[in-house]
Image (cartoon, rainbow, N blue to C red; front, side, top):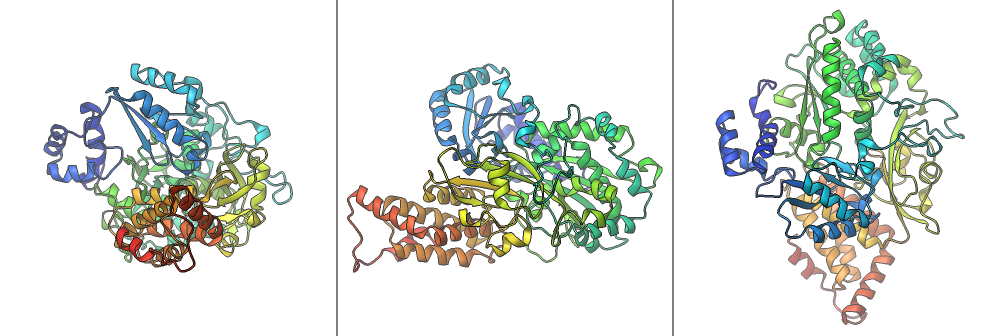
Length: 608
């Protein structure tokens, strides 16, 4: 509690600690936390019921979370979950649950067993996995994420210099050699030149550091693509109680780049965080990391301790006069906390509900103070910008999308993983050249350029340059840089259903268009699957998506409406064929030209 300006911020860590002791957030656990924190049990219960990782009823001693979101689903996660659930039926020691995206799409299908990520999993792994979990033993050691070998250089995986021969040339990129053994330690990071950029930045005035960031024209790597330098400049000069928050709540389905950065090169993030705090004249920083990232939080905590011991974090850093305290804060499972104002509410010890804007966080953010929020990849790039110089960095990529980008590629590709490229490379090169393309005999049906919230594109769009503006012109968005590939073996309705169900589950319920629209869209998709829908229902569903977009406090409603709208637009023929086939299977008969469609009834039943 003493680490935070407001002790309520300790609520999530306290509930997590109580759950470790009691096995769940029991009434007794809530009362104990309430007594220590001097809050009401009702307040704590409202938090426990909001976050997925806080259990509000007795569960097994060992948790097995199976990711069933779109990237894992495309590789057999639904069958894996059913097999695990059936095999664990009646076993009170095991808590087997389907879980939304766990940020490990590169090892799909996968599961988190008591916080340890294992994958890719096959059905034959089920008996051994459950037996080892039940016994509290290390689960499938050879398939654990932490035990994975370094990347295959021939596959250009995991942040290797995967530059295009035609676009980027043989240039060594920012995150090259990320698999070097021991890079997560300060010793190895310093040996590779780590913290030299921090020394250089601390010898400069804050305004000079900001000028370099502005000259780089780097756009945020978390989804919105807003220029980092402008964000910093919005903070009022001379204001007291300013804050810097690193958004490490990487929850967009298809995205897993920040997970790898924190696990393999945490000191790069810390160095970037300290440099950014100097530019923004901030003395207090928080890293909000998603609760599912157990290993990464442990690695980052060790790295922070090493940085403190070396004087890179703390009071009077390297004798420069600049001071910075850093608190590592773990979330508890809520996609909405990736939205910056939802994150701030969660960090303050509340449910992760988005705030009305304006005021924007740069003016009134964490604890009502001016706040700079950037994600892991953005901050991890800052040391390179200072080392290279902003203008030189801006020569990478293209004019409106400078620099390099880590791109997570998953789904129906032969080599899923993280690839670093200069922005502006052809998308085909990422999907086919680096990730190997779809399996033998399959073709790309559609692909999400920026995670599941991005409008889908088709094979006809594979040659669109991969940068912010080109993706926007193509009718989609680059987002956080997560490409999900769907091949022609998957019905498009299955894809739409996965997307809609995810956002229905993750909606905080604060906004009516999002709360009702996500639920109604799922029901309409179920009508299509059962054959009860008509072609007019597709028109109504497309119209509803348009009315959701732009009418919510945050973009979660838009995040469902944009891909669903694009699926209806681009795959209407397949959806209509699905309706006809479903009607035939259910014995309803073909739709007649004069048959009145029950679309209005569907709207009323859906509650919209």
